[in-house]
Image (cartoon, rainbow, N blue to C red; front, side, top):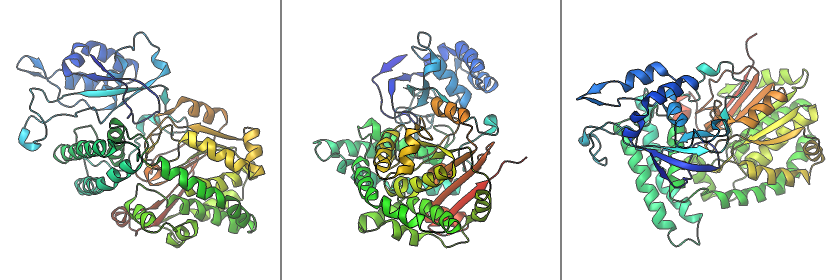
Length: 485
């Protein structure tokens, strides 16, 4: 088992202890252990045993091993697992280092080298925190984060692979711009481009190369590749600038909201959440606008929104619920930095606090696109608290708690969340979950069933996806769900 240096690109978590690359011989040398560990962690023992015992010319041949049980079993017997307490960390596949299931037919993908087996390398990152299910999931065993399986949907697969290819130039440009003092930034960015492009070509020919193919896995692979070439946060300067601008408008936005009647204010708060979510640098339709029009701001974003009735419109049902007793505790999964978190999310949080609802605000542990991170949210919250007594007292009295999700992805997997967040949600009796943004509420979790009330909201900033959903660019999804009795 070969041990590599620490790698920067786990799909979850912001602190990596070690990165392990496993050759196939080592995997199968420990096959019996893998079976036992699969039982211990609740993995798919039957699949593991079946797929791993196909004989070919006297050798064990791996056919298809990429499912939760297999990856869990691998993580369970990685080097160091016997000496350390595995309950103190989790493992995540590093897509930049893993080669996927390699083709035995080189003509399918000429960029791959020929080898005798169908599997080459699996690289795992050790994440310095245990990741667990959200206790509010209705049925964790049947939960699937992703809305669309691109391995089954050929039309969607073709579109999204092309979409990510066409976005590459912009990502490379942003990566170089984020490190103006680095002499080799352009060279590293070009290496990133080549590696990620190669991954996309592999997936065109072998959609199952890394297991189930989804928009989430494509986004995470891009983040892993950026990390591999030392671009951990290409949007850091953009986020700092946008946070500074948005903070200047916070008090004015709050004063305008406070001047409204109660019912009118509830709609204005939701529209603010949606308008804030427009500011997503991961969406080409938005990044083009933001780069060409520096004056594009909060009010302009509101005018971009679809008029009611929205594409998915549960607002009237939500308004009726607000006329009832306040929620005990709301768990909010935030999306972007800048206008989104400051002018969209925090006024909504402030209203919940004013109603008597405790709030857990969950942000990414590590950077991805222009998503707000936990460390950034602490700074933003302090700045807002200095301007607003409601937020200030809520922080002091721990009625507003900021936590990290354990993820460094633009999407959200509710089965792999920081254990501290899960414990807090249980202890505080969270009875409302708010999931914001296309990555977290549309590409993932759109069909997630929870034990409590939930709000899933996003602005659809991709014209192809909007049309597929029956709408147009900047259509609104506002989905309020109540669990069945």
